[in-house]
Image (cartoon, rainbow, N blue to C red; front, side, top):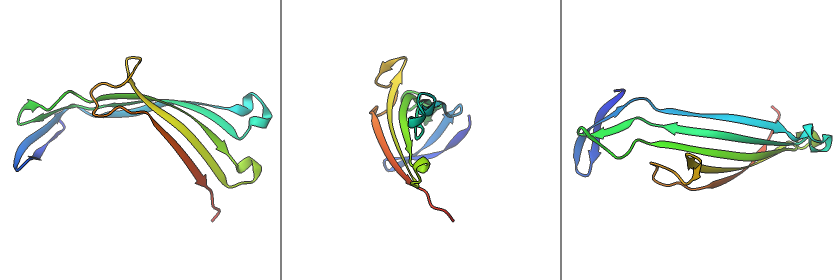
Length: 125
């Protein structure tokens, strides 16, 4: 048991404990598109396998729901303006939760696909 304490439930407090450890991590693979053609040098593609496995939570000695076991896959591309002299970079990525190779999720409250677009500006100091 790694975590033990009090948790407020409504107007009362209850004993809270979490057995086991939390394991969060990812595996990432990326490729520069310049390997295909020199004109694609600013572009790179990547993919990630993400996981978040949590220990069992108990409130007053009773299991509080199923153990969290979230997994997802992320793919994206990055476009850098540094090669063209622009201090900018644009990243676009899509994250999809899944469990055992089926789309959807298991033991998480909300399993949605998300798309992130990030524009980065670089500045010299």
